[in-house]
Amino acid sequence: MSINEHVHSADSEIPAGRVWPQEWLKSLPLRDGDRDDFLKAMESKAPSSVRVNAAKASFVGASDPVPWHPDAHYLAERPSYTFDPAFHAGAYYPQEASSMLVHALIRHLGLNEKPIQALDLCAAPGGKSTLLRSALHPESFLLANEVVGKRLNLLEENLCKWGLSGYALSQADPSRFSALPAFFDLILVDAPCSGEGMFRKDSESVNHWSPSLVDICAERQARILDAIWPSLQPGGFLIYSTCTFNRKENEDGLSDFCRRSGAQCLQLDLPYPEWVQSEIEGGSALRAFPHRLRGEGFFVAVLQKEGGNKSGPPVRSKRGSKRFSTVRVDALSSDMNYLTDGRGRLFAARPSTVDTLYSIDKALGLITPGPLLGSLHKERFKPGHGLALMAEAIGQNTYNKVNVDHELALKYLRREDIPAPANARGYLLVEYDGFHLGFAKAHRDRLISQYPQNWRIRSQNGCLPEALVSAIDFPKGESMPS
Image (cartoon, rainbow, N blue to C red; front, side):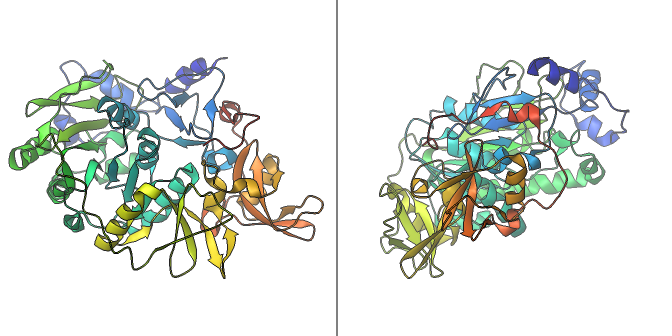
């Protein structure tokens, strides 16, 4: 049976009917005659989809593609990603298909054609940050910001596994970005919302919904837009998205913002008829409804700041950073700049972004200025997990490799020791099916896992998701792609 047949048979399963809040049903912006089809879709099994990391892997064999993303595919069923080592290696990211339309918008706006400075304001858990990092020009810079501290670890983990440089992490309230006026060419605001579009996948969210929650979210979204708008360059773009259906958090809120800010809402004419257009202040937004496409509820619009010409390059610090300094590391590629902090941690930064990093650190304080590669102790470099998972070959080739099967890969990912090959010494790169999992340190007849403690697999049970693993392929005969 093909992947297509698997997917459609899985999606067609309809569980027992559910009771929906009447006030929510009345608020739905549906077209005439769509209500029954919409409710039937909301009671069906949600489709699963993944976005392949083209810098590391490819999707092979029969494919059921997501139309608006060239590297995304629907799956026949949702596997246990936890027990697939390729997932931990950053070969792919499980992501809801509707939200991947952001990739098509980046192409539509031409933001992939030259280096830009971008901000993902509400970035955790990292799905759209990894999407942006792949969709933008390779020399672009992305600041992934998350104000909720307990969500930062997952954001850092997902960006690290994705393996591309040119990003930094911050934890700043939108109000603090006033210290970076006219700084970003692109701002993505995936706004905190009432989450109506995820009701099918998260039944608990239905119990939390109320009209007052919608009001609270709409007020919060207005504050976020007002706070972040000054940080957008004249002529720059703000992509606004939510995973909710009601107009108050979407069209109505954006219309009010356009009137008070002078923002222009763009007309979005994309070649995807399954997306529903809605009007906003002379422009349009796009909506995903689960009865019209295979995905969850999603809303997206693009605002542009008045002024076709930029006001000049963003203000950059000429004094450097008090917390980070540039160092040279002979063991690593000279194509990168390397920054260290007072604790000896070593980070990768593209040469063109160092001044930008210093400016942001001075204004907001960075959590990390780039991928954490390891640490320096008395000029000796100790490799870390970030170096192992880099898609860009900046130093992995100086280490011997050990290939493991699925059972040993899971032991390694649980931070358990695995057998050492003969004459193993120092740090070795652990590989599974061509994908780097991380480093291990040789000690006598065993390898001690260096996998990050707080990212380890905690469950002892699980099996290999064969249908997915057979479809995600590392290009054989090559080193890790760059």
